[in-house]
Length: 146
Image (cartoon, rainbow, N blue to C red; front, side, top):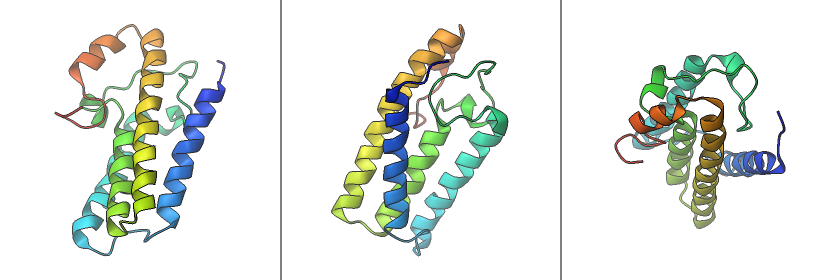
């Protein structure tokens, strides 16, 4: 498996945005209306990791040798629940301290994850013959929206 500069770049942007958002404001919003989505985002991420099995979790988008297509847990409905979880969690943090540059970081994170998921899905389609059917019956990030 060859890892490309593109993979490392996408992951670097993802972690840079995440770090800047997390460390530039409260770690958990004080407002319960925002704390709830933050906690739900974390729980969705944990559920996705448990459904995938921790040994199969990879930060880089390349499909590892021996990987299996996971369609259980949140993957029954969402193809990229960890991306969903990250966006929900960070959105709650940005709303807790809504500075213009934090909004910009969140938008960069969103665009980066969309680019990353498209790149990743191309590799998943080449690696798993039934991935196209899986794509037709699931949502990318947000159920009933996209």
